[in-house]
Length: 416
Image (cartoon, rainbow, N blue to C red; front, side, top):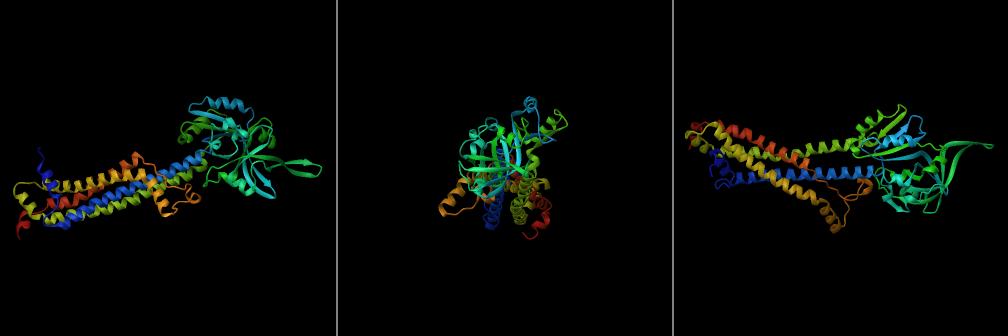
């Protein structure tokens, strides 16, 4: 098969050197360094993707994407508003709610909480709290029974279990012959849920039936607002703007990014910075590649001079060493990509095995939100890392190749 002479010679130079094994060793180390950098970078980015996915999954399982409220803190005739919102494209579910800050007391223990009045069947379409029940069921919230479902941490702090009584104290006050007294109501614990640590859902949330909440906060038939679920939760900001144009100016529309957007932006920024920091590992290996090619050029000065006297142009000489460096970079990158993908896909099992064998715990759910090492391999990360390594490798060949092309045959052969 015909190959250009520059490609043929460049490939020959990548083979083992009989006269100088040290340069061959440095070439191998450069190749392995590039591969190692690519492996580490792909694995770290995949782990960060895994953490990002788990955190978002935990947030979106409890926080509605869109909340429609009112500037007066309640919505009258909410059924009409529900019909309007339901007809908006991309809306998958709408559920009314009543919420408010309260104090929960039991056996002398007091804890602040955010209480949500919900319709159990409708709430299942908005959040995943029904799947996080560790005791009782969400459907146990029956209108008029004044049952309450508590987060696990909240229940522990109040020292209550299923069937115990909890007094709910609201900020509203009632007038009586004895003076002004706060409004309160006794509820029965009918369920306990566990959403997981990290965002405090288990320590601050409680659920009651919508009808009971309306009586508790003296709202009559009014509600605090509507929770809205949409097809793409990441399009919540755009959807908010579109929905605001269809509702009255008194409507107040919020989305999950207003509460957690800064947190996820920080995670994205951290991933970006980690990419550039770990890219320095590849840069170190590329620097070794530059040194390798410079030594090869010095070793092959006589060969270069002979090729020049035989009619090889400086461009041909330059191409020879670009090919040699490119081969090292391509092989190192491909090896790193393949091993990086394999490691990223199995890093969770590997860490779990190490923890099991050596009886150690690397991750604590109270610190890292999860108690295992998650990993999510993304095609875009693999392509970005691979192309970055290839580009750096090709850039590393430019100076040595240019230096080789400027070799003067007379000077190179003077002492031969």
